[in-house]
Image 1: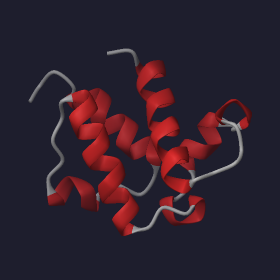
Image 2: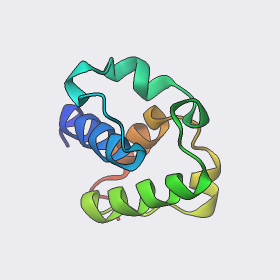
Image 3: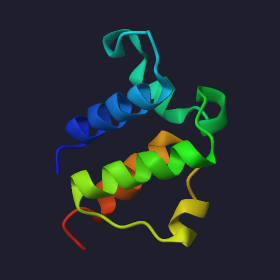
Length: 87
């Protein structure tokens, strides 16, 4: 699994959910991935929408327990890259 591609896709999907006007290229990707989800405007409903989109795209499944451990986009990246191909 190409971590860089997964990282880019997570950021793209997140920015689209936020309706951000800031171009994706101008984001500091690593800092963005490490920010707590509420600080970037992701509430619990947006987390579910993000996760469902990424589950479909990468063929992984997150349980409620898995979701409970998600505090940043980096956590989602780690989960996806660790689970892709295992489901």
